[in-house]
Length: 102
Image (cartoon, one colour):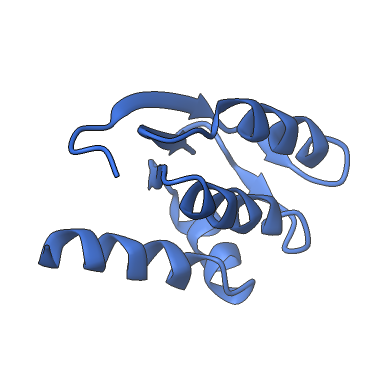
C-alpha cells in the first residue's frame, strides 16, 4: 500500500436521495483508486435518506478493496443522526480509529 495518499475531495450534494444517490455513486466509482484518500465533504449536505446513505458505505467498501481511503468531513447534526441510524457512521469511525492507532 502507498505510504502517502493523494487527497481528492468529493462534495456531497445538498440532498442525498433516490434521485441524487446514483450520481454520487458514479462519481465515487470514478475517483476510487489505489493511493487516493477521498474526503467526502458533507458541509452543504442538509438531508440524507436512510436508504440512500448506503451509497457512502458502498464507497467505503470499494475504497478498502482498492487500497484507497475514505473519510467524512463537515457532517451536521441532522445528517449525523441519519448516518448513525442507517449504521453507516460506525464503519467510518472504525476506519478512523484504526488509522490513528498505526
